[in-house]
Image (cartoon, rainbow, N blue to C red; front, top):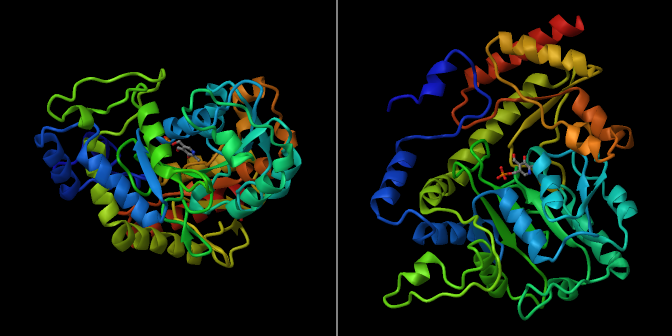
Length: 421
Ligand SMILES: Cc1ncc(COP(=O)(O)O)c(C=O)c1O
């Protein structure tokens, strides 16, 4: 198969995380295209079913990104102006941007040494205005989601439900009676907490299938619903389906039935459905996720782990502990004692050696928009410290052991060059 142009351009570099696009994926996409059904159709429905089965969640909806999917969840819960949503200061901007989109206020809290949200900080940040908490599974290591659900439940006396008139026949805030826990599992598809896959702990869990993610559909996302009684997951799914398609009472599949052309619009919905072309990629990815993708990513991370073991210049990321097993999405290495300038110089030196690395993430209070909103990094010392010396190393299915060793060599030499040790 002919290499795509960017692969040729960067042929001499070890890339950071290209997707695994092989003949199987190309064939699946071709079949979807030739099937005549290229928007939301049977492949999306099958993809949703497979994700639900894999994660163990009662119901899943596949949409066009984590961002739009998670924003729909905030809207379904009736979150808007005057409400607060607790997010970690250390995350990708999407986590907080969706809160801004619905007109609510992101309340930032600090993280722990493993990059995930600090449950104690969440407890302290809860107010009568808190309508949602978004723990983020950074790098694929799950946040302490059980603790967050417990904290939200214990603080139910603070919760003041608002009537969401848009949700016909039900009121999610009244039904749940506490802050919604919406897990940002953009990085952690397939990770586990206490043996159960991510998706089984929070009320709603959002996955991302963006091109760099462990499992991709080029762009895409999904929500796994795991709401407590008395929620009816079929009803919730139907609502999200409608909300993701302009509020139309029938989707394209339903309208295909002979004579069934008439539809209504119950609310001014959004347009963020997944296409069958995307789902075709996702179905191939899903089929080999557990047998090929996960073992290879784990092997790569473990090879890095071994290579940096016992070297005091490095702080290795936590890949797993007694209750959590990450998805090996990112290998977030830290350079002991490096300043931000030194870290940046190390990255430049690594790039000169032909290796692409990255930084996950610039904490939200350091970004112009959020800084302009009055968020100050000094309030999140852990986030700042983690960011200062973090370097994410390449992890992707086709990365060979030899390339992993080259990355390690490039990192060690670059650190020696910049730090003088
Ligand atoms: C932590 C986190 N949350 C959310 C997102 C947004 O995902 P998507 O691009 O599917 O909207 C990303 C994307 O990289 C992410 O890293």
